[in-house]
Length: 310
Image (cartoon, rainbow, N blue to C red; front, top):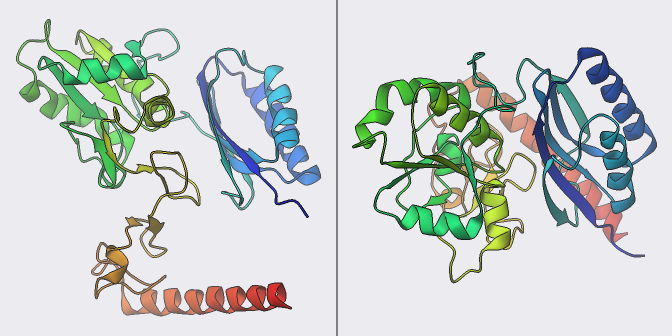
């Protein structure tokens, strides 16, 4: 029996999305989930669509044909990868105010953003001494991999980014009119908003990496690669290496932080219960709950392994 290969498509697109069409598309996608092995996480809002879907090739083709009826798929920002296992349990569709939450209603990424830079030009740009590089991702994403010499705003979530800009960005810029500002994120969506924000605040020479880190790793050879470490992704793979394959990180199921192989060897680490990041975050009662949950997970693993062996 041939092993299943799952196609994983990350996508986003800023466009005016009417509420009645949002609800209609949601219902049709959930209907497809009932018929096929479709999983993922999608976020719909009046400003567009964002998310990742996972399924076999024929299922993804059905979904993409459906999306064509609601969006201009020629303008969809898409990144494709593959996996031998499902990277989501099921299909979740969330309807929110924003497809990536920043909390600045006066900006409009569908109309005004910075300049797209492809992967080859990006390398030249970030080597320029007159360029500052800003990682717009969250602190735990930055901790496992980033571009050399990039600024880490150390945000817990993207909605903290505008405050960081107001309080800290000018300290890195000698001259607004001559300094290049290069920004990047995982797939490009956060930079669409980040560049729109900076333009709204009167900054110049604003650039962002088209397709984000994932496109960069796909485009650039290992010899020319300036991204160090692994790239965090919001699914079961946790992080991807330079070949866009599952990396070495896993997730602490207590606090949700990515943890390395070395982290798992630390004395604080107890699988499913705690890691060195959350050693002081939870009560004894919490730890007991986590311990019971881990016992159930281990029990299920053992039962599944026995079925497989039999």
